[in-house]
Image 1 (cartoon, rainbow, N blue to C red):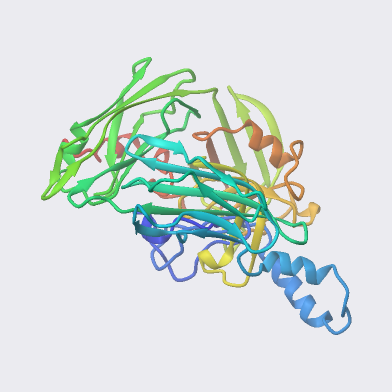
Image 2 (tube, rainbow, N blue to C red):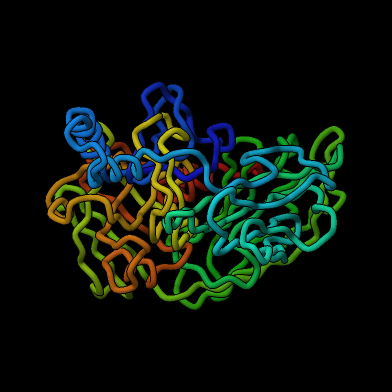
Length: 439
């Protein structure tokens, strides 16, 4: 299945939308030309979901008042939005005094986690859930300017079902100013595949000036090279994945830097992060397996279901971008209107900006895992509703860090684009080094 409710196509410089989106219950869209959505819900059960719909239509007159198939299809196809977030998902140019809240019309909020990402990196947004459980509001005060806000909310509806929602919005930026949203976060411990990435809120005309004002260094020392993807994204990486224990420093000297006509920077920030243990996961699509290696030793070999023949999973090296204990995946966000809308996908880890996930799957028949590929491109692991800690998906989730590499082999699909998520490891080193603006 692919697709979480975020990351529209225009947000991704390397995601070229196409007419027949490749996503669904388990996966994400691809880089092939043509119109295509940006994020896809979990790709693991589209064919069975369609079969279930046919069965419901055929049996509706015979099962009146019954449950089972009809309830399963209702859960997969979804209903109206249960969690309402204001400002709307994907809103741009939100003013500082606009209302910010999360609410439910039915049931109660169980958890709300809001974060803001600005010139100083990512910080939590303080707030609280009302005593009746129906709403969440941040502590009083205006929104920060030039900041990207994310909300992850989990609620239990009136029938006891858990639902989740993930949204983003961005506040207005003063004219003539630019900011770079960077990853990873300050003081983070990340996997060996982490790539330093900055996305700017406006096009950079003088890329050489900006690149000179940003330095990335490592201890132990290693060569690190810059690569521009268009005029709004700048990434840095070494030739090979980082050594465990490496300490990395990113120095941003952008404050008042002129990057073009009427464009001046706002940031003066030093970011430190550390490389954790060495863990890589390899998905063999043909064998329907996921193998986890830590420091070269196999720690897990698990059955999976990947993209089907119509929606194959990307090949190549991808990097874990986000981790969500539970999230919603909605087919309409990636061109699969009416195919699925699963409100509580467990143990979801985003691999591409276009919507490919490695996630838990509780709705597909157990015998599918390790035997058949049925998703829209995501990689599904066996799990339980609500997410079990000792399930295959729960174990992989618990062992994984943002920045870990997940490599997909034998899928028959093209290699993921270097700018689709942190796919830069798929670009040859000399080509990567040629992407500098400094000549």
